[in-house]
Image (cartoon, rainbow, N blue to C red; front, side, top):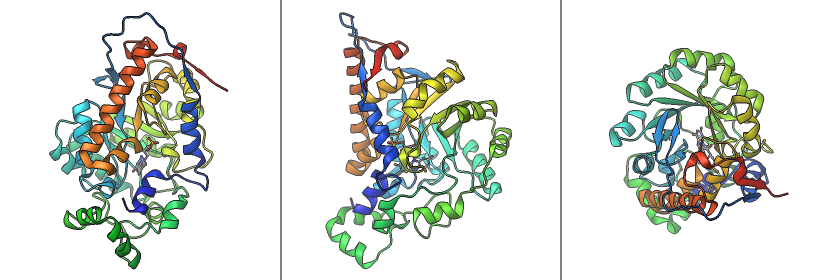
Length: 359
Ligand SMILES: Cc1cc2nc3c(=O)[nH]c(=O)nc-3n(C[C@H](O)[C@H](O)[C@H](O)COP(=O)(O)O)c2cc1C
């Protein structure tokens, strides 16, 4: 990959990328408490997400500009999600439109991730388009009133779409296949937005609305009849607030550490949110999940399921759809093996008694 593209995916906010580093470190502190001498021949990794049975306790989180990582883009990821029987989240900053994705992979469970832009009329249009092309859940992302300070992107001069400057031409020599694919497939641009000049931070600054409030959530709740998930919740108080305002579920998330530096750790906040919202509300978690053992740990800590971001993007960058499938296979195998070695054979057996945190 050209460095700027890899860094856009891999990077996070702040000089030391503290929110992402800490999220990963939290998983490293987990110590499983296995039970031995249990018959673990048959493991059932399926579970229920928002009332529907899914094959694994995870979903593909929404990520913007996916075709920049690999020209196969969102449809490649969605096809893998369909095979795994898990939901796929399409971003407002996607490089495939809601309609095209639905046409390309009609069988995948589709969630649409919405950013509320200054132009609420346009947001309303997006909601309608999502509904009429079969998306049954909206994820409202609320941790992005302004852009996080992502130093790697600034340093690399990443622009969207990548521009052909003297530096990129030099870069091309090192990554001919990536550039060839970029330049010979349909133009790389946001599928639902027209203003694509400048850096990611510039774009967020132009398009997103720092004035968004709880009233906007009420508005969305009133126009969207489907399931509504609020993403980017970081405290117990906010989880309770959005739940009171009609959210069916929350995603505890710091946007993969790409927004606020030194943010709360979703993994640590999770048990308190579970206590506050009770067992009947779905609570998802993301950030730093790179292995099946991480997924199992999050479930033991109280999550209904997890979302993955970079884990599948790394696969996509490495090998397109085949790479994403490889990541999915690894995750499924790791989840199964971890459960077997823990002495647990179904997702509902994963609870606080299965882990303890090392100091
Ligand atoms: C390259 C990239 C782009 C992202 N774009 C979006 C987006 O458009 N909308 C959104 O709600 N979250 C976005 N996210 C955040 C992810 O949905 C998710 O919260 C995060 O990736 C989870 O952390 P992980 O990458 O460590 O799994 C993005 C994350 C990455 C890495």
